[in-house]
Structures are given as C-alpha cells and as structure tokens.
Image (tube, rainbow, N blue to C red; front, top):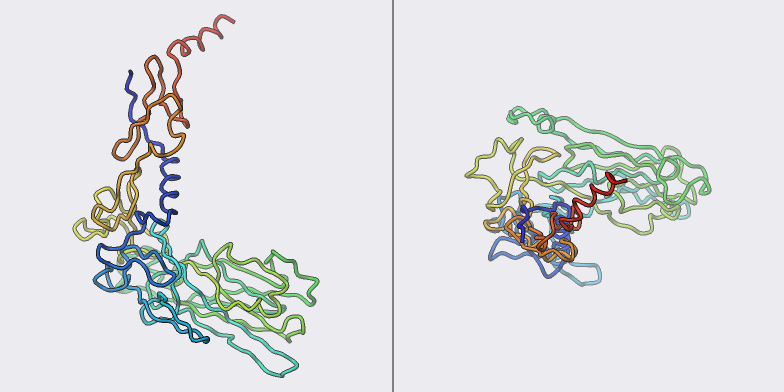
Length: 371
C-alpha cells in the first residue's frame, strides 16, 4: 500500500467543530475554568475567560454577576448580568467572541383618549463593561411616522486607530440617527425598513455604552400613537405595520457585543508569559473592534484556547464522507490521512482527488492521443 502524504481538510474540520459545539452534552467548545460554575439561570454556557467570580475569571473585566431576579407575579430565577448593571446577558460565544444581551427601547407615546404621555424617549444602555457593540452585527432602528431615532456614545478614537499611547487617548462623541416618514398606514410595507414607517442605519466601531432617543417631529396619529428607537441584532427584527401601534408589546431586543482580552493593540505586543492563549495548540489574533486580542485553537483542534490543554485534537475520521468509500481513514494530531488501497493513487479525500487505479492514470492520457 502506498502511503499518501498527510492531508488536512479545512472546510470539513470547521464543519465538524461547529457540529460538536452545537451538541448540548459536549462542552468542549465552551468549558469554564476547572472547579467553577459554567451556568447561571438560562445562560447555560459560561466559558472561561468569563466566570461568576474573580477567581473563576481571567480578570475583573470578565466577571459575571449571577443574581436572583424577581417577576411581578412573584416568581424568580437566576439571571446573568454585568457587575453594577441591569443589562441581562443571554448568551456568550467563545468561537465568535461575542456576547448577546437584552438591549433597551426608547419610546415616545401619546394616547389622545387618555391625554397622557408614555414617555421613555431617552434611555441608556449601560453595561459598565469594556466590550463594544458589534458594528457588523447590529443596526439602529427607528419606528414611526415623522419619527426620529438617534444614538449617542463616547468613542475612544486612539483605541480605534490602534494608537499604542492610550494614556493620552482622545475621547469624542458619536452621534447618528435616521428619520422615518409616513402619513398613513397604507404607505408602509411589512418586512422593509427603508424610511417609510421604519428606518435603520449601521453602528460605528468603538461604541460601548450608549443612549437612545425617540421623538416625533410633528403630531402622533391614531394608527401610530408611539415612536420607537432601538439597537438590534441584524436579522432579529422584521418590521410590521402592527409595530406602529405598540411594537407588539416588546420590551427589549437582542444586541451583540464584541469581546477581546487585554488592552494591547496587537498580538505582537503580548508577552508570551502573560498571554491569555494558554493552550499549547492555540494562537493569537487581533481584535477588529477596539483594543485587545483573541485566542483560537489551531486548525485540526477544538475546545477552549484560554485553558491549559483546552484545545484538543479533532478526530476527523468521525466525519462522514471525509474519505472516499474504498480509502482508509487515519486520524493524526491536528489532521487526517486518507490512504488509498493497493494499486490506487490519489489523496483519498471526497473533496480532493480521491483514489484512482494506476492504469487509469495512463489510460486518461492515452485515449486523447489515440483519438
């Protein structure tokens, strides 16, 4: 048997890592620090460097408060929050380096019958963390007719420009907004948010905590007694004409935050002795939204790169159809080898050359020449 050169299949490896990470019983892609709790209420996966105490976290910026939350009906359960904040944390992704939280809604309502205002026209999203709002995963939305939705936030410009001298950082303010217009409900179209009843704009890089404003330019109408403004995860909201009345009783929207470790501007500045990338089979890569760096397992490995021995070898042979049916799969550390049977050549991969008879190789050249 001719032993073929060891090959890796990056695409199939990524698919298998995703499948394993989605398996609830397998915490290899999100394990906490040994001896520490990995859950809090509905947040069932708290991976290190996060933790519910300072001893279980990388540092104080990754501490999560697990508090009792009481409902109006008297029920209560555990809820994860940022320390000194009332913003709930609903999900943590180790692979994507994202946090998902419940963001607030600014609303400006006037009900003619009651002659009363329901105004929370200015609200604040205050996590008291260092994790910025993802500029790629969120948008600002305004709902209403003649409605303005606006966002304001301080921004560290030096951090965004990767200026190493953060001691003299320049902090400014980001202001942005959009205007939604309509005079009757027939003018709006469900599922679209292009300015008629609903408008949206992207979020700038570097936005951490922010304030929202919702305001009506003229007068509210019977079919649109309320105007709304909120930041929401892309794909998590689809406009409906019913939202012009009461936003269908929604109280919050999911918002995605980016997270990274430390205040370094690049991996080159990280000292190997103090790096958070503790696993032998891990590597560092730069944050794309503000300062800090991130860790990931090397190709062919999966797990938690922030823990010692956290990145474990992937057994690619467990992936269906990785090798062609008549090839033998052999798992190697960090890769896979598909061995063709005797008398065959090729890489043995279903996504590669497979295995062909040696005679077929010459036959393929001989037929065109004979013709």
